[in-house]
Image 1 (spheres, one colour):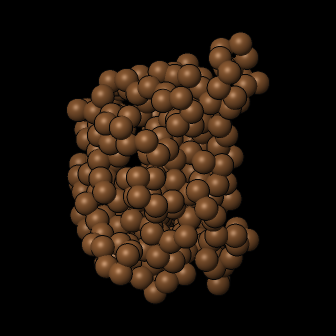
Image 2 (cartoon, rainbow, N blue to C red):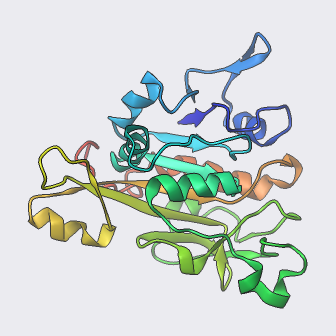
Amino acid sequence: LFMFWGEAPNKRFGHSGDNLRHLMRLGRLRGGKYHDPKFVYDWRSEQFREMAESCCTTLLVAPMKNNMPVWTAKSADAQRLRNYVANGNHLILTGGSLVSIEFLNRYFYYQIEPLSTRVLGARSRGFGNYSPGPWKKAVTPFLPGVYKATPDVLRQEVTEVTPMSLDSLPSGTNILYMDPTSTPAFQTIFCQRISPLHGAGPIKTLPKECPKYAKMGYPCSCGTITYLGYDWHGDQDAADWDEVVLASVEYQSDPDESVTMSPNCPA
């Protein structure tokens, strides 16, 4: 497990980044700041470059409150993010802030949208772009085993949960919790394949199309992105969500669950 500890998270005591750091039992206080070899301080660091070229780690990103890296989607830095996931790794995005959503959509070529009042209509109950919930666990044959012991229902806490519209989710998404129109917690498989053009970068590929391209000599390499739309600002309300994020962290270490089709991952 690694945790992004750059400028984006709110690391002040009792705020979202610090609450997640405490939950993961990471960081030692030194010189007024927390330090840990499992912290990733910069997407452009040598540490993350090495992580992007290897397999089978989990990177937890606390709610992005302060900023996000601004690159073109086709830049080497953005491609490194995609390579990290596609090389059999697991990226967990939390918080559901507009910054976190833009980060996910911009750099992974998605069009995932928050549930809007236009969809909710009279049911919005004054919550703006936030759904009042609750969301029931999607108990299906596709539910990973690590989530079977998590709470059956997740609830809205004022406006701390930002669910995504079910209609906007990409192909290959496994919904963890849902109501009829939205989900605050889901996993999606992100895949890339080698380009047939010499010198060209990897091509994003729908998971369902990977077998077809594998037969053509262009196999996919895939990983997992988990979205958890809770803010973690008020840890007094976070017990149920704590269980869900801890299960998400365990997902990558379970070989029966984390099937990545990555040639870089050990069998």
